[in-house]
Image (cartoon, rainbow, N blue to C red; front, side):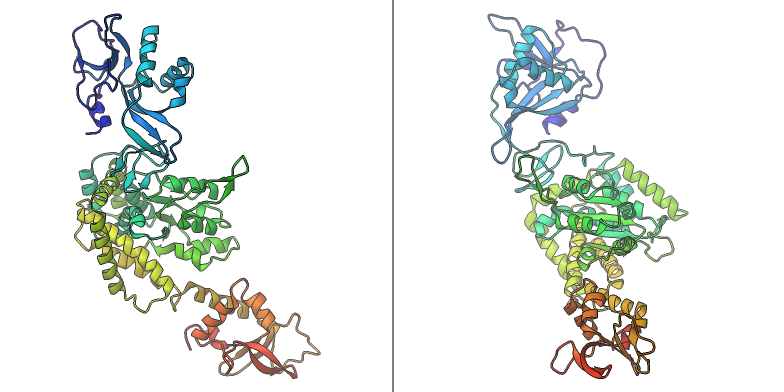
Length: 590
């Protein structure tokens, strides 16, 4: 049992009456977690109450002195560079709540009133007589034996996983400050399993969202990059229910997209290795959302200068995050005049929240009268029971990393086989790798006894959700190819008046800013000037990318020498053009 648990087990109620200090009802604490940590002092408990007090023992020259409420110096701590030395102080405050303070050692060199002032400000119930203050300073100034390393973020540090209240694994780590991401657990793991995890069965989006919640700790284990999954659908489809389910594993709060990119850097860093749930992508400015998504998935913030002119350390994180919204990343960017790049959409992949069963996101409401009733019950269960499953998942993971890696590889092999990945485009394979890791996280959580699901449930849900994403991807499996075709089609449809036909009288009716010629036939041929093709048709896309996409679908006529431009006679002379076949306007492959 931790020191925190040992003391708090006794600290449930606080008597308001001051105990009689001369009465023989003070018992000396002798347990390893509750006894005084410095020789010559005692921590005593009053009767069976929750009151603990620190006493300086009597000597031949002085009587015993009560110093204040219970206080323990657990060790000394410093950061990984050997700086920032402090004493790890635990104490019971005036509300009988156990607190921890990393007391800077430089306070020992200051006036003792500064040290005591810091303790009082944190709620320590100190006796303020001269003898008591002398004893308190002596107790805090003793050099403890145990050593800790302070860290500034939760998640993996070496072979240990640091949480706000403890470190899991072999290292002696302490979190320097409790992150805003941390919340107190609610309910119990058994009630969470019964009322949150089990009702997710039969609902592919819910089981996938919960599997994703366990996946962030596996990024470091598997060596995979960060990334996100975006649930997109109408306002009442059930996206928020999936978000609540995902957040319940760790007990983290739902976060809003409504923040600056700088603000989201801090949010991401505070959620490193435990996952992040972002609600309603429409709340962030469409002009920056693409770069924000890219930043979140890249796992690193912007470089900035420190006040002294040097480089300030960049924030970093590892995350598999869940996002929700009524629009896709590409659509939101497009509405603000921005074009989504394939790299951005691959880092935050969109899947339809509607599962196609006529109940929005849900497929099985387990006997309840309506999807709304099921959603309400599940959300209430998440609010009542949260914050237990994630830490327990990590406890089992840390205990057997090798076994977890074996299961990850087994799941990935099965996932790749079942979705037919052998001939898939590289971008599709990249997304499949992320979905397979999410599936493995769900299967591990099941193996660890956390979900109550049948083996294979998480794999099946991940395959279903991957299929939903893949169905909306480009026919050739490449988003760059789709963007290229869209660019060509858009140009031909909107700029058709700039192309001269064979029977057009250009002298009587000159064409302003001519883009090329159109030769009518089966199919038509669009002869596009090279400069127009590069600057207007491609419009920021690589020329090679656009021509490769057109050729792969049979929409571009290359030269016999393999060059993309070919000689054609037009306007009375031979010129070089990109010759695009009219089949591109009909879609499909020639």
